[in-house]
Image 1 (tube, protein in one colour):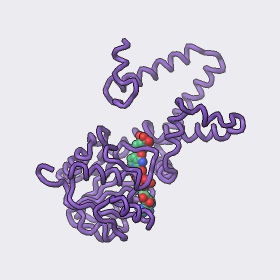
Image 2: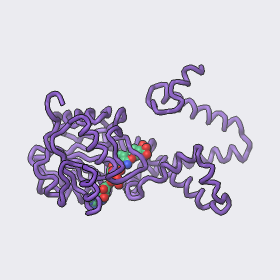
Image 3: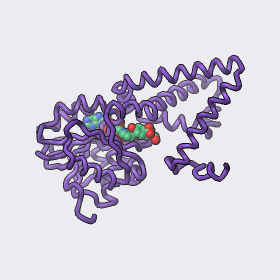
Image 4: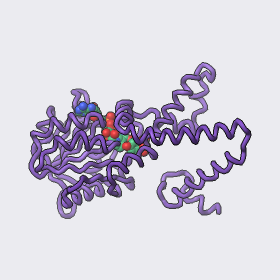
Length: 308
Ligand SMILES: NC(=O)c1ccc[n+]([C@@H]2O[C@H](COP(=O)([O-])OP(=O)(O)OC[C@H]3O[C@@H](n4cnc5c(N)ncnc54)[C@H](O)[C@@H]3O)[C@@H](O)[C@H]2O)c1
Ligand SMILES: O=C(O)C(=O)C[C@]1(C(=O)O)C=C[C@@H](O)C=C1
């Protein structure tokens, strides 16, 4: 790494999908010096040692965070507060604590009170992941060309913020800043409510399995397959997301239900114009995303422009 590592010592707390992806991405670019890791269960720590995840796998939070310049909380949102409380006595003066939680307001409320005055706390959220979880599910390219949102608090140290920004850019991400309220509302629209809808749709299909026999499995290599992928996501992570981003998710779910009822009424009344107008509007949104170059993985990427 030209100019030396961005942080000398990094501690990863929780060795699951995001932490393991961060580790491999850090190592790919020689971004940091030493990486220590802590996981709650013996099984996860054993797996981490077996696959070479982290330079040192520690059996205690104290060992993992002592001397670390950057501490990354990569546990489910509901566990962030207790973990912050447990590591607080061992944090080095001048260190930065960050997190990768999918919800920001609740994490800030639960973590910030435990962070000593001589330690920086800069919340974050990489907008990348898959339906997989655990230490063996991570991969180095997860953050490439994806967004990472940083949520600095009032009075956050500009140098610590800049260092964290360079770290995420080194992991392959584009970095934006946002305040916590806005973050949680945006995420309720683009991630949390869609997950709930996918969980519901797969649940409905499962309830009807006696009617459909095994056709759900047999014919799901279509749009429904994407719902089943999302609905396979980690139950603990998503339980915590909905319990902690309650307000924004309920707001978006309310709007979603109103739209759904309007479409339901249009179907019942045979109002084809309503359906056609609605679907035309949503198709334009999808095309806008592709034209703006925001979804380079889309199978039809680049084709929309040619068609016109
Ligand atoms: N998976 C995604 O798509 C994704 C994307 C962006 C952000 N996130 C966020 O990242 C965080 C981690 O998610 P993940 O996908 O890596 O989950 P994961 O299930 O793969 O890993 C979480 C790890 O935290 C550990 N853990 C759970 N409770 C703990 C506790 N009380 N103390 C210590 N360790 C504990 C688990 O054992 C596991 O090793 C979550 O806050 C999630 O909201 C996830
Ligand atoms: O692609 C997926 O499987 C994801 O669910 C990733 C996803 C998302 O909704 O986009 C999930 C939760 C996060 O906090 C960020 C990213």
